[in-house]
Amino acid sequence: MGENKLIALLDKGVVIGDGAMGTMIYDKGIFLNSCFDELNLSRTDLIKSIHKGYVEAGADFIETNTFGANEIKLTRFGLAEKTQQINTAAVEIARQCAGDSTLVAGSMGPLSSESTAYTDQSRKLAHNAFKNQTSALAKAGVDFLILETFSSSEELLIAIAAVREITDLPVIAQMTVNQDNLTIYGERIESAIVKIAAQDVTAVGLNCSVGPADMLGSLEVISKLTDKPISVQPNAGLPRQVENRTLYMCTPEYMAEYAKKFFEKGAKIIGGCCGTTPEHISQIVRAVKALGKAQVSKKTVSIVVEEKKQTTSKIAQLPLEQKSKIGAKLASGEKITTIEITPPMGINMSAIIKKACLCDEMDIDAINIPDGPRASSRLSPVITAALIQQQTEIETIVHFCCRDRNLIGMQSDMLGAGAIGLNNMLIITGDPPKLGQYPNATGVFDADSIALTSVLKNLNCGIDIGGSSFSPGVCITIGVGANPVAIDLPREIDRFKQKVRAGAEYAITQPVFDVKMLMDFLKKIEPFTIPIVAGIWPFTSYKNAEFMANEVPGVVVPDELLHRMSQAKTKQQGIAAGIEIAREMIAEISDYVQGFAVSAPFGNVRIALAALGKIEIDKV
Image (cartoon, rainbow, N blue to C red):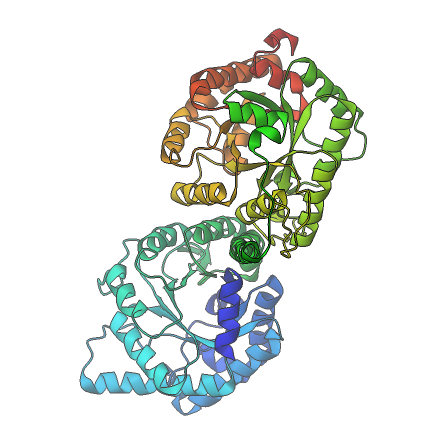
């Protein structure tokens, strides 16, 4: 039962654990020299309140208050005979708080902070201590066990062996190391993880000792050593003494940002250790959960589509040049120009139509229409595109985001778009709602951009997500996003390759400000040749450049460009400088890309037109 629950969670996506227990107990006024494990008997309400905080924060599992509840550590407090009672009470308390939707993990820590040069006798004592605690936790009904904060791989191996004599419950085995990836005994984490991963454990990982930044470096090291799921539970930074109190200084937002990086680097189980509060976990849940759902659903959707294709007759997809004017130019090698115009907040389309008409007069090939950029709520891009194409002669490229609809809804909208002649789409995964104005909204992410690309390719061939055929198929060009300056560039390149295999016919990049990084990216994707359209963002001021550099995901702005923008003293000078930089960028990369997707900052299409050389700067 326990194994199925944990494995099911891991199969669905990233699993979020709770945070600190000891820190929370200390913050509630319990002295450090007290036995925190005994509080399961004497202060059940206090322990319940801590568990409830993490459950309400959205943790997938909570850990029992039993980190030191083994007979060796309890002996120091004269409580060895209460080992089973303390562990049993801890599980009962956690279970009462967890309800039906949260798992309960039995926490087991090391026996001693002293050097562990084991003799036969001490090894037997340790083995029995771990065995007895395991027996109590398993009988009380934990869903799985988490062996954490071990500094000695030898001791952790003893613990694993003892656990396996009692139960086949899943085990997460975690070591703790310093910023140099060494245990307090000088053992390298690489050596320890290889030994631990070879045991009968469900996942391996790291917790405690260091903050998020150092743990990210350690994660990069161990992720190459095992195929088993990896867990990371850092402290909320290194502890600091402030007015005789031990405080951890990492903010919840900071922890959440690193949690996303943990996920990108392959962590499957993410939580916190010392100093981590329910607020930290709440922010981590919001930041990471949507990403996990997107990645997992990609696999399941792609598999379903592939299976259906084997048994369903399909029609030939029209070649790119026959799908739209944009498709024809891309297929022939001609350069295209597009301008991105964001849909209105309300329903008044008059200003958007005027801008589209101006772009048409200036021989722009298409209007790019983003879908809820930065998780904002605006008029539907499909409706916006339909009205533009009804009232002007210019084509549109509809951005289609996976965040807001389930798979059925997405298919319906794509079929609808095809039915009314919206023949160009850019498939994107989308920013998590946390980044936008509605942080309490939930992301759906039934599919990510790779899976949805495959779905759209099949709709072009007359096959729906259920495997049923229809005729004629839709006639939509399939564009995807690309980020040449992604933090994890190998992962970005791998995803790009998967998008091409799934059916992508062209790509539009994030705004490009660093030519070298773009060139490096283009070189790495040469074997997967589809037309690349470069994103261009003309700055309007130094403040705007700073915002792009620091607050827009997936964008890197070189310091030299920030310096140039800082020299502008007036609003008009700032706009002129931004246009000049954009023009220089376009000229420098023109021979290497097949067009430009220029954003209209703050809705000012004249700035975008000036960047493309369609109007003079003084006409903006």
